[in-house]
Image (tube, rainbow, N blue to C red; front, side, top):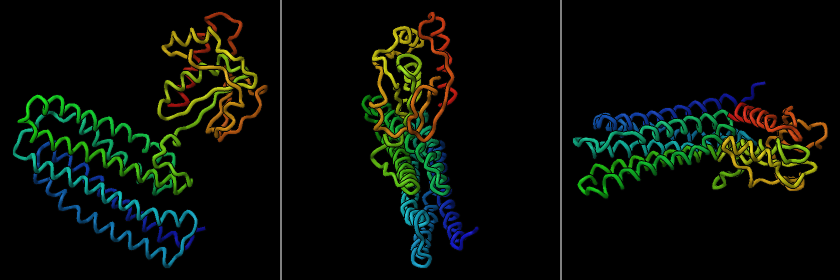
Length: 347
């Protein structure tokens, strides 16, 4: 049944989307003007910022009026109040695009110091994060918001690459390049700050929908996965090794067993080493060692009937042969089967 406030909320979402589109377009136009050192195009980015400022004021007024007259509750209340925070971040994103345009005007009349390589990549990332963060907010999608937040480290990496190349490759070798290098340094910094504001929006989404505060705590976004097997010495250890290699910053991976053996199977270590993964540092663990962790997914390796139930948001059963007591080729076969499942299910 359509609620009486849905029409007003739809209008608010429409204005937010319009503001987001203008902000994203400003990023695109500013970088295109940089590629061609087009001062006229950069000037249009600067003059177009007024439209974004007006939208910010209009949306804030809509939110205040909505709060006063409609008195929303629960998720609607959080959406309206968070909308005023989102407009602040979108307005700053547009301002940073203006800052880039101003750097273009500084550079106009001079040849580019170097071909643009990492800056356009960072620009594409900034546009993607801005678009996805706003989409996550409008559609209340915390999973998409989490992906945006995890991209912020890539933005930092790209900014650092630009900085290192310009400082070490140009400025430190020839001070006459400073006037052309510093504006590019600032452009990279402006783009990285755009990604920070997109991250702010994404963090607000997770708080709005789930009530989880992830600001300054990105580790809370990692998907927590547990592989279980009775002795936790072979199959689950191999799965843990592959998942850690694949997941890196996106997952926290564990393995455990109902009757842990205490040591990892030597043949499992050997065949994993052949695959380029060292699991010698892993150890066989019991359920009691991981019982305090709230897992997103628990995967049983083929012993679901004998392993006790372990609580999680999602349970998956893999029917994988136990290679213990068999030849090395069986271990390799099991290893490859686990590897395929990991790469299919987690990519």
